[in-house]
Image (tube, rainbow, N blue to C red; front, side, top):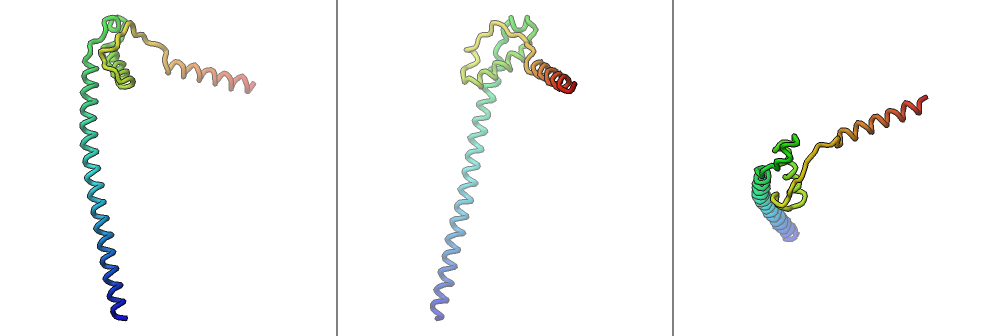
Amino acid sequence: MHEMVSEGINTTIIGMGVVFSVLIILSFTTWLLNALVAKFESKGKQKREQKAEASETAAAPKEAVVSGISGATVAAITAALVIATGRPAGSFRYTSIRRSGGWRESGLQELVRTQQRYTEGGK
């Protein structure tokens, strides 16, 4: 009887030792992978920032500046196109850039139409 209890305690101790050893290894592996991913993400972020800076330094077309669009606006549009399409900034050629009513104007028009429907429906 004494042997069985002793064997059970030894098995429990060995089992717990194995479990904790595996948990420690998994914890270290997770920490190491997180550190590696953070390192690669920071390198990728630096490359993206360099590409964005390069596209911002691209010369703004004279037509855009003459039409009242600043070079910073053209650079922002170019950077958005570079990110969206994956093509280099030099592959884009602007013939003209003009402002439109855009989302703000569309939103205001929709708001007015909605208000008109409610006031007409209430009468």
